[in-house]
Length: 92
Image (tube, rainbow, N blue to C red; front, side):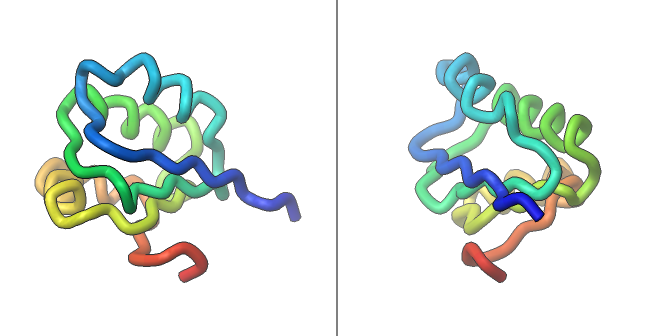
């Protein structure tokens, strides 16, 4: 079994950072991990990219690690949390 790729994101994920976010998540596939522990904010433009990642990889196939309170709440409000496996720490 291949070792999952881990993509570490940080700062604000917003419309101004969409190109960088698209590049960072372009190769994420089933079994991979996106570490959100250093992400402070996410907007609709960035959420759209996460939805595309989930569709490409499969429902629940990508793990999101440690989304902070506001980021986790945003995912829950728009039900994006249903598209990913969300854990509080890597390795859970």
